[in-house]
Length: 162
Image 1 (cartoon, rainbow, N blue to C red):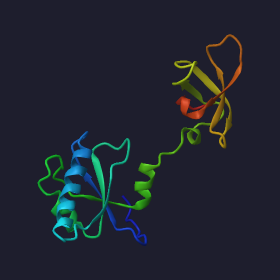
Image 2 (image 1 turned 180 degrees about the vertical axis):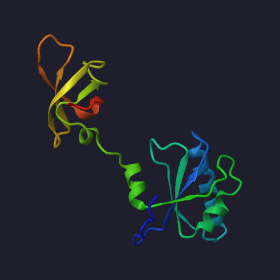
Image 3 (image 1 turned 90 degrees about the horizontal axis):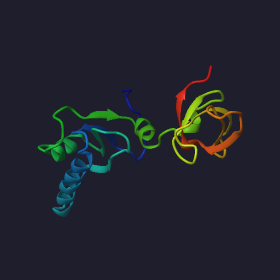
Image 4 (image 1 turned 60 degrees about the horizontal axis):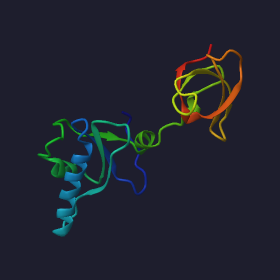
Protein backbone atom coordinates (compact mmCIF):
# COMPACT_ATOMS: atom_id res chain seq x y z
CA UNK A 1 0.00 0.00 0.00
CA UNK A 2 1.18 3.53 -0.68
CA UNK A 3 2.37 5.80 2.10
CA UNK A 4 -0.70 7.79 3.19
CA UNK A 5 -0.64 11.56 3.36
CA UNK A 6 -1.71 13.22 6.58
CA UNK A 7 -5.11 14.90 6.29
CA UNK A 8 -6.00 17.71 8.67
CA UNK A 9 -8.21 16.45 11.49
CA UNK A 10 -7.72 12.80 10.56
CA UNK A 11 -5.55 10.43 12.60
CA UNK A 12 -3.67 7.52 11.16
CA UNK A 13 -5.89 4.73 9.83
CA UNK A 14 -4.91 1.11 10.39
CA UNK A 15 -6.50 -2.13 9.19
CA UNK A 16 -6.53 -4.99 11.69
CA UNK A 17 -6.91 -8.52 10.33
CA UNK A 18 -9.70 -10.53 11.94
CA UNK A 19 -11.34 -13.91 11.56
CA UNK A 20 -13.73 -13.63 8.59
CA UNK A 21 -17.28 -13.06 9.76
CA UNK A 22 -16.14 -11.81 13.19
CA UNK A 23 -15.41 -8.19 12.25
CA UNK A 24 -18.34 -6.81 14.25
CA UNK A 25 -17.36 -8.86 17.32
CA UNK A 26 -13.84 -7.42 17.23
CA UNK A 27 -15.13 -3.86 16.76
CA UNK A 28 -17.58 -4.20 19.67
CA UNK A 29 -14.96 -5.62 22.06
CA UNK A 30 -12.48 -2.86 21.23
CA UNK A 31 -15.21 -0.19 21.48
CA UNK A 32 -16.19 -1.56 24.90
CA UNK A 33 -12.56 -1.40 26.06
CA UNK A 34 -12.32 2.20 24.81
CA UNK A 35 -15.52 3.11 26.71
CA UNK A 36 -14.08 1.61 29.90
CA UNK A 37 -10.95 3.76 29.53
CA UNK A 38 -13.08 6.87 28.97
CA UNK A 39 -15.10 6.03 32.13
CA UNK A 40 -11.80 5.92 34.07
CA UNK A 41 -10.88 9.34 32.67
CA UNK A 42 -8.19 8.03 30.32
CA UNK A 43 -7.83 8.75 26.61
CA UNK A 44 -8.30 5.51 24.61
CA UNK A 45 -6.51 6.98 21.58
CA UNK A 46 -9.10 5.69 19.08
CA UNK A 47 -11.21 8.22 17.18
CA UNK A 48 -13.30 5.88 15.04
CA UNK A 49 -13.95 2.27 14.08
CA UNK A 50 -15.06 1.34 10.55
CA UNK A 51 -16.34 -1.98 9.18
CA UNK A 52 -16.84 -1.40 5.43
CA UNK A 53 -19.52 -3.44 3.69
CA UNK A 54 -18.22 -6.23 1.45
CA UNK A 55 -14.77 -6.20 3.12
CA UNK A 56 -14.34 -9.39 5.08
CA UNK A 57 -11.56 -10.10 7.52
CA UNK A 58 -10.59 -6.49 8.35
CA UNK A 59 -11.65 -3.76 10.77
CA UNK A 60 -10.33 -0.21 10.32
CA UNK A 61 -9.35 2.07 13.20
CA UNK A 62 -8.47 5.76 13.26
CA UNK A 63 -5.86 6.29 15.96
CA UNK A 64 -3.34 8.94 17.01
CA UNK A 65 -0.71 6.39 18.05
CA UNK A 66 -0.34 2.76 17.00
CA UNK A 67 0.41 1.86 20.64
CA UNK A 68 -3.20 2.76 21.55
CA UNK A 69 -4.48 0.24 19.03
CA UNK A 70 -2.11 -2.47 20.27
CA UNK A 71 -3.24 -1.84 23.87
CA UNK A 72 -6.95 -2.11 23.02
CA UNK A 73 -6.67 -5.01 20.56
CA UNK A 74 -4.36 -7.20 22.64
CA UNK A 75 -5.81 -10.61 23.46
CA UNK A 76 -9.07 -10.01 21.56
CA UNK A 77 -10.20 -13.48 20.56
CA UNK A 78 -10.75 -12.98 16.80
CA UNK A 79 -7.86 -10.59 16.05
CA UNK A 80 -5.17 -12.25 13.93
CA UNK A 81 -1.67 -11.94 15.38
CA UNK A 82 -0.29 -9.96 12.42
CA UNK A 83 0.77 -6.33 12.48
CA UNK A 84 -1.88 -3.67 11.63
CA UNK A 85 -1.55 -2.22 8.11
CA UNK A 86 -1.49 1.55 7.56
CA UNK A 87 -4.21 2.66 5.13
CA UNK A 88 -4.71 6.07 3.49
CA UNK A 89 -8.06 7.85 3.87
CA UNK A 90 -8.47 7.65 0.07
CA UNK A 91 -8.09 3.85 0.10
CA UNK A 92 -10.65 3.53 2.89
CA UNK A 93 -13.04 5.82 1.03
CA UNK A 94 -12.84 3.55 -2.05
CA UNK A 95 -13.87 0.59 0.14
CA UNK A 96 -16.75 2.44 1.76
CA UNK A 97 -18.13 4.06 -1.40
CA UNK A 98 -18.06 1.45 -4.17
CA UNK A 99 -18.18 2.58 -7.79
CA UNK A 100 -21.72 2.46 -9.29
CA UNK A 101 -22.39 -0.36 -11.76
CA UNK A 102 -23.17 2.14 -14.53
CA UNK A 103 -19.56 3.40 -14.41
CA UNK A 104 -18.12 0.03 -15.45
CA UNK A 105 -20.63 -0.72 -18.23
CA UNK A 106 -20.32 0.56 -21.80
CA UNK A 107 -22.44 0.28 -24.96
CA UNK A 108 -22.10 -3.17 -26.54
CA UNK A 109 -21.50 -5.02 -23.26
CA UNK A 110 -23.52 -8.15 -22.50
CA UNK A 111 -25.25 -8.06 -19.11
CA UNK A 112 -27.42 -10.41 -17.11
CA UNK A 113 -30.58 -8.94 -15.65
CA UNK A 114 -30.69 -9.87 -11.95
CA UNK A 115 -33.91 -8.10 -10.87
CA UNK A 116 -37.32 -7.26 -12.23
CA UNK A 117 -39.60 -9.06 -14.70
CA UNK A 118 -36.70 -9.92 -17.06
CA UNK A 119 -34.58 -11.54 -14.32
CA UNK A 120 -32.27 -14.27 -15.55
CA UNK A 121 -32.19 -13.03 -19.15
CA UNK A 122 -29.10 -11.82 -20.96
CA UNK A 123 -29.17 -8.51 -22.79
CA UNK A 124 -26.89 -6.26 -24.82
CA UNK A 125 -26.48 -2.64 -23.76
CA UNK A 126 -27.49 -0.21 -26.50
CA UNK A 127 -27.59 3.04 -24.53
CA UNK A 128 -26.54 4.51 -21.18
CA UNK A 129 -28.00 7.48 -19.29
CA UNK A 130 -25.44 8.06 -16.52
CA UNK A 131 -27.39 11.00 -15.04
CA UNK A 132 -30.48 8.87 -14.40
CA UNK A 133 -28.48 5.66 -13.74
CA UNK A 134 -30.49 3.88 -16.47
CA UNK A 135 -29.52 1.47 -19.25
CA UNK A 136 -31.25 0.77 -22.54
CA UNK A 137 -30.86 -2.91 -23.45
CA UNK A 138 -32.02 -5.42 -26.05
CA UNK A 139 -32.93 -8.86 -24.70
CA UNK A 140 -30.77 -11.40 -26.56
CA UNK A 141 -33.29 -14.23 -26.16
CA UNK A 142 -36.15 -12.24 -27.75
CA UNK A 143 -37.26 -12.98 -31.33
CA UNK A 144 -36.80 -9.32 -32.33
CA UNK A 145 -35.10 -6.31 -30.75
CA UNK A 146 -37.23 -4.23 -28.38
CA UNK A 147 -35.30 -1.56 -26.47
CA UNK A 148 -36.00 -1.75 -22.73
CA UNK A 149 -34.89 0.84 -20.15
CA UNK A 150 -33.90 -0.57 -16.77
CA UNK A 151 -31.99 0.77 -13.75
CA UNK A 152 -28.27 -0.06 -13.91
CA UNK A 153 -28.36 -1.79 -10.53
CA UNK A 154 -30.70 -4.39 -12.05
CA UNK A 155 -27.84 -5.86 -14.08
CA UNK A 156 -24.44 -7.46 -13.66
CA UNK A 157 -21.86 -7.44 -16.39
CA UNK A 158 -21.28 -10.79 -18.12
CA UNK A 159 -18.77 -9.79 -20.80
CA UNK A 160 -17.31 -6.69 -22.38
CA UNK A 161 -18.54 -5.72 -25.83
CA UNK A 162 -16.28 -6.20 -28.81
